[in-house]
Image 1: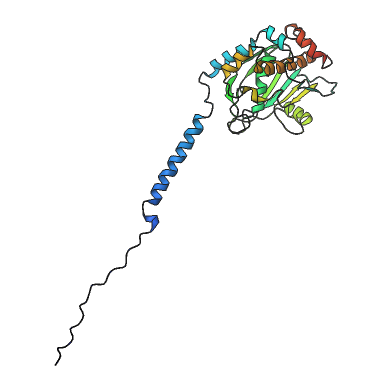
Image 2: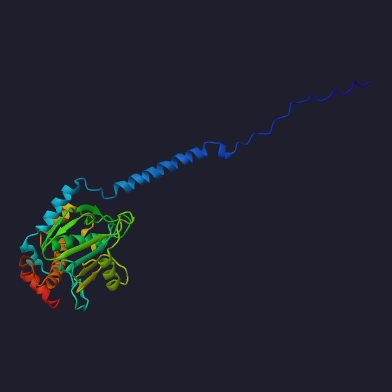
Length: 282
């Protein structure tokens, strides 16, 4: 008789392989670390390519402003209008806008973020210094995200102006980062509404006789330059910076001279100003 069949050996069963979820592995950690490093690198890149804030505060601003105000008369005479077409237009108003003291008013409305305002302020600082004392200016740059980013300039926020000939009424409405910092006065807003239907800045009104909407020259001439480089270039009549900034300032000066009946003579008697004034009918 054949021996009984032996049962087959029982082998231990194999457990199915464990599949670990990718999310529980090192992958997400690696990606998170890489992402953080990318963000940090991006922030460092941005910070390194923005114009740093000036370190000298009001003292440095006063020094730069003094240099602008001391642009030699010979430079102004040689430049005349420069390459700037007449930036201010006659309003046709027969009434001269004056303040409560009877002084003709020059109104400026701008904003710290605005590159066109940044360009215009250089000319305004020079022009207004011919009629009085402009002080307590601060240095700054236009927005880093707007056209002509980081244009070096002044800010009129907190500034003061003293004159026996004209009232300079100015306001910077918005900060470099886009926050509201001030509102126009009733007179400023009224003139703005009347002569600037598009709401553009900078806006300049000279006695309600002449208005300017936008900058007198393109800010690109100032690109890549800091405050010291710009003010140094103003002393050279052959430079593009002097040609535009001083030329624009001479036009503004001539318009104000019409409003002040050519006072003071130190501002209004130079031949280049007289020649430009005639183009306003002065």
